Image 1 (cartoon, one colour):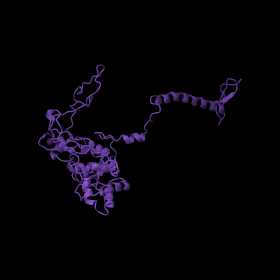
Image 2 (cartoon, one colour):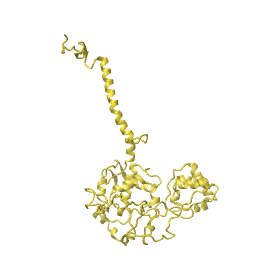
Image 3 (cartoon, helix red, strand yellow):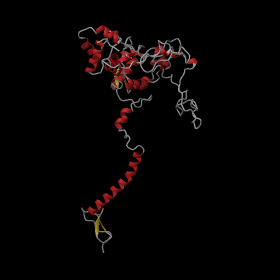
Image 4 (spheres, helix red, strand yellow):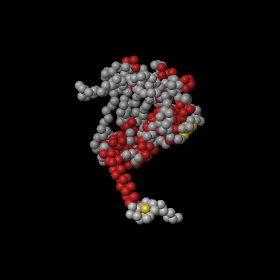
Length: 390
């Protein structure tokens, strides 16, 4: 009779008695090991099938889960507490170089231009930096409201520049360039000195010098919740519609009379190109917009020789700075055609200027280098040489 406990031989597996009276090694020997592995694998497959079915049954055949790398590329926002801010640094001097090459054509050399967008710099004082309240926001006689007058957090500047600038090539700035441009903009507003280098290590200290850092309020109760509001209830009283519901909603917005012209006429402060145009706030709601302030309709590209050039102009945002017959930021296409169209080398010259950019010929607002191909630049140059036909 075999014993249930037998002496273990050194270097060998421990043995046990089998139900048949024979001996078997721990794990059932080589064959038993395979059987055990097969059994475990079967159990894992059975357990995995419901989980896989549950994950894919809701939207079968639609899309896939985003990879961590894809999520990281999308999740680039920077919060006021600076979570999401990447490590890096950029100097005011570096920012000036980037600014003059990629920003000044729309915002002016000193950030004060209002030709394309509202001014970024101006209206703040050294006292504002001390108190954190911009005094001129309460001065109705002051002509306008600049970005540095209104923005409360430096993270807002960093985040917007990073994701949206320059507007002809969003997200094209490196992390160093974003830090540098932000530093230069703050230097223009007197927030940081000329020899300053902004970084993720000192940006919280810079926040303490923002002119309107104490100008943000939560009294509107737009975000109800602990720590996000000063009142008990939100400013809306929404009730779910269950009967006699309106079939078509009418969405509209209007300024209250006391705020209608508090910051000057918005129609005169907004650029005259693009999708959004400022309302004439000198007139009550519903009043007709003056013809000179009304947005001009965009002419569709015509068939023929000018169709392709017109499509290229729209694709490369050339019409944002150049009007067909009138000057916007830069000269009109008709003026360019009139100046260079008769030259023997007009096509080559214009194609080169389109791709390289320049400043000084039509004024002090520089045109940045454009990224369109040489063939596309030639097509636009030919169109200009032929007189810029509509």
